[in-house]
Amino acid sequence: MSVIDTSCIVIFGASGDLTQRMLIPALYHLYVDQKLPKSFAILGVSRSIYSDQAFRSKLIKNIKSDKKINEELLNKFCEHLFYQAINTSDVNDYTLLKKRISRINADRELKNNTLFYLATPPSLYSVIPEHLAAVGLNEETDGWKRLVVEKPFGSDLKSAVSLDESLYRHFQEQQIYRIDHYLGKETVQNMLVLRFANSIFEPLWNGRYIDYVEVTGAEALGVEQRGGYYDGSGAMRDMLQNHLLQVIAMVAMEPPAVINAKSMRDEVVKVLQCLKPLSQDDLENNLVLGQYIQSQVRGKCLPAYREEEGVPNNSRTETYVGLKLFINNWRWDGVPFYLRTGKRLPTRVTEVVIHFKKTPHPVFSADAPENKLIIRIQPDEGIMLGFGLKEPGAGFDAKEVAMDFHYSDLKETELLTAYERLLLDLLKGDATLFARSDAVRACWDFVQPILDYQKKSFPLHGYASGTWGPIEAEKLLNRDNHEWR
Ligand code: NDP
Ligand code: BG6
Image (cartoon, rainbow, N blue to C red; front, side, top):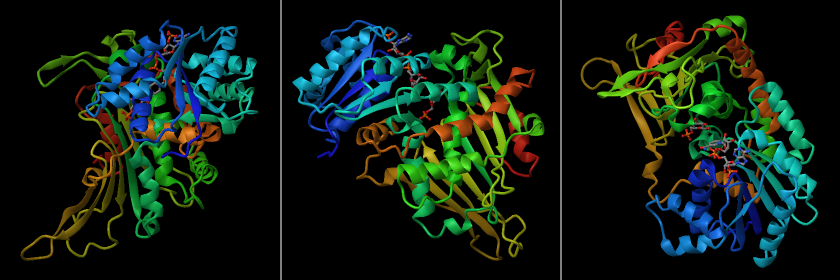
């Protein structure tokens, strides 16, 4: 049974996609696994009008798409769900909200612990905290009050700083939890265990033995129904500035003395602050921006990005980014990190590939296989170590073989989804896997020159759906005698 305190989870944006598709199903699974306290309440808040019952019915549909449904438990879970319609932008409505929370807490004998989850458009991220504070819902006199902010944390360095300033007017940093769901992924966390719980990898984990590092975040889907949002964001803000740079931090950070929110996030920020600032030469030569064009994939005509719903037909928003970067510190000096992310690539895969240097002298054959460690974040979560083995028969030629571990082999263990893990941590008040303000700023600091560069005229390369992006991204590595895996 869980040791989490009873609490009320207030979700703003409760009629929206994130709540329905991610948050409520994750809370249901935690409930089924008995990871939530016996008493808890979930109060959905948005402008649309629903009764509690109508809200429950709406949410159930999404949970029911899950094969592992247990009708009895689902009905019991629904008894914890409530709904309150308010105009989120109107401070007067927050008195009503406060009363509703008090009533739920009293009826269900909950302590006055409240988690405020902002699953709304970012334009409300400073409005809601201000209105909560106006009615004292930020005060921790009778229980904790936590504020959860979803990405994007600003749209550039300036807006990220001003978002922080507005949050800090009413909440302290230790009350604020910034969600980057990549940090909730088991395999992203496993990078730390792989590195710091095994003595065999860490001595090799530096520029003396590592030749280069690849990080890929590929998606097969296009922008689907999110064209309106995506066009103001692009791959740079949507994936690279947050998810991929957080992955880089896990690969490159120094070992924390212990795993807790402070030590861990101190190390994350240190390495992000060491990202080598991009020069004009880097922007022109080490950055590839692309956009998918209309193409035939397996006999089907897929629209160009510019033909997607909500996207202007002259859009210059990138759906692909390839980037070569360096980390200016003792461990990583001179080691290139190649990042790529894009929509409509051949498959959905997120992985890190560590390429080790060749042996100093080719004893067996000049083209002996390289050692590489592949950390598959998704799908088919696992780790593969590639190394050379003697080709059976005469002679001493080496061929590449692999030791391959798949998480699916751990049959008895079911991985928590990222949102399950992060919601659990939120309720426990464990901020280890949440982005701290200084880390978010370090990421914006690094990408800001790219955003500035994009304000002027810049090359945007078309690529066909189902390919690995613009040819220029291949050249980025080929130039250095490397290639993407
Ligand atoms: P939706 O557009 O689907 O939902 C927005 C929600 O906010 C609705 O419930 C809407 O309900 C409510 N809302 C309240 N006030 C306003 C207002 N003034 N204007 C518009 N909506 C308002 O968004 P998502 O659920 O997709 O995303 C929510 C947040 O989470 C966004 O910041 C997004 O960037 C972030 N996010 C989403 C992900 C996803 O997978 N969907 C993934 C990662 C982050 P009502 O109109 O009833 O008030
Ligand atoms: C979200 C982006 O943050 O991450 C989406 O807004 C992207 O555009 C998604 O598709 C990828 O997440 P995952 O977990 O599917 O790799």
